[in-house]
Image 1: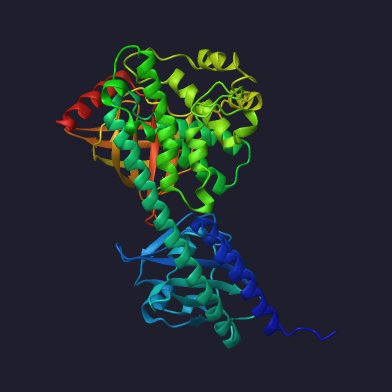
Image 2: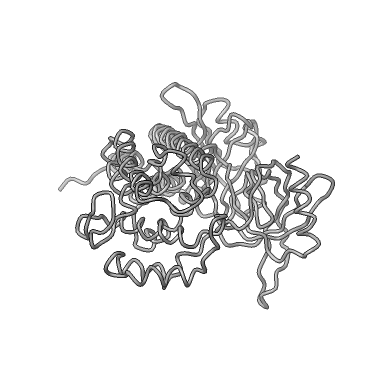
Amino acid sequence: MERKSKEVKDLEAVLEISNAMMLEKDLDRLLRLIAHKATEVMEAERSSIFIADEDTQELWGRVTEGVDITEIRFPWAKGIAGHVFQTREVVNIKDAYNDPRFNPEIDKKTGYRTRSILCAPLINHKNEVTGALQVLNKKKGVFNEYDESLIMAFSAQVAVALENAQLYLEQEYTFSQFLKTITATLDARDPTTAGHSERVARYALNMARALGFNDEELKTLEYAALLHDVGKIAVRDDVLLKPGRLTPEEYEKMKSHALKTREILENMFTGRNLREIPHIASSHHEKLDGSGYPFGLKNGDMSISAKILAIADIFDALAAEDRPYKKAMPVEEAIAILEKDKGSKFDAELLDLFKNQRLYLIERRKAQRHVLKLPVEFRPYLLVKDKKIAKTNADVIKATTVNISTLGLLMHSPHHLAVGIIISLTIDVPGNKLDLSGRVLRVERLFHPGEYNIAIEFADMPPETLKKLELAVEKGRQ
C-alpha cells in the first residue's frame, strides 16, 4: 500500500478541519476549534486567532490555545499580528525577542516564552483583512516555507468560517432584539405582568439544560417561551387590563390569546429549524389530561418542550412578586399547588426535576428597575478558605449600567465574568459614589466582540448605603 506524503496528509487535514469549521456557528466554539486545529496541523505549541474591531481599531483574541486567558486586546498597529493585519503579509520569525515588531506584553502576562512565530492574515470574500492567525513555537525546529504555504491555505478557510459565524451571530442578535421589542411592547401594554415572559423563559431553559437539550433545542424553547403570550395583542384592553374577576364571556376572550399566539407565530416561523415554536408557545395552557386549551391536547400530543413551558408558565403566574392585584406566593406553596396535579395535568418527572434541582432559583424582580446610564467600576473578588471575601489584584474594569434597582443592576461591560462570582463595584450616582459588592447572576454575550450585558445582584448592602442608592436612583430618573 502506497504511503501518503506529508503534503497529502496536511491537505486532507485542512479539508477535514474546514468542513468542521463550516458547520460550527457558535463563535466561541469556532475560535477554540480553530486554535486547537491550527496548533495540531502546524505542529506548534500554541495558536491564537485575532479579529479586527473596527470601532476601537484593535485586534482581539478571545482564545489562546493553552493559556488561561479569555480575551486579549491591543491596538491593531502593534505586535506581529498588527503588522500582518496592516501589511497583509505572512510573517515568519525564528527568534521573536530579536524582532523589533514583537510585543512581549502577552508573554509577561501569561508567563509563556515565545520563540518562533508564524502569522498569516485572514482575508474575507471581499478581499478585506479581518484579522490574523498566529501559531507559536514550532515543536521541531523552526517554521519553514512549506509551513508558510500551509498556514495560508488554512487561514483562507478560517476567514470564510469566521465570516459565516459572524453573519450568523449578527442575524441571531438582530432577531433577539426583535423578540425583546415584542416582549417590551407586551409589557408596556400590561405593566402588571411585565417580565413574565422573560422569567418563564429562564425557568424553562433551566429545565431543558438539566435534561440535556442541545443548542438548537434550547434556542427553539427560548423563542417559544419569550413569545408564548404574543397572542394577547389581539385581546381587547377592557378584558386584558380588567382589574377584577373576568366574566365567563371575558374569560373565553382571554383564553383566545393562546390560539392567536399560534396563528401569529405560524406566520413568523416557517423555517425547518424553528417550525416547532408555534406548537410549543401555544401549548402553555394545555394539560396532560386534555383539560387545557386551546386544543385540549393530551399527554402524547404535547412535546417535551410544551410540557416544560406549561410548568414554567403556571409557576411564574403563582409565584410572581411584582403584580399589584395579588400577594407573592412562596415558592414552596406554588410548587405544592402544581404537585396536586402532578401526573394528571403536569408531567411528573419534569415537576420533580424542577423541584428537586431547585430550577426555580432565578432572579425574580422584587424592586422596580429604572433605565439609567451610570458609570461603574468593578473588579472580581476572591473567596478564601475561611469563606471570607478578599479583594484580588485584578485590574479595575469600567462599565455602564443599562438599568438599576435597589436589588441589582444590568451593566454593559467590555469584560466577561463567570456566573456566580462575587465582584466589588463603585457606582457613580448623582452626587455620590457608592461602593458595593454583588454576585453575577447571568451573562449575555452581545454581537459586537468583547461586549457583554451582565446582571448583578447586590450583596450585603448596609442600610445607609441602601438609602443612598434609593435616593440616587430616584434623583437619576428626574
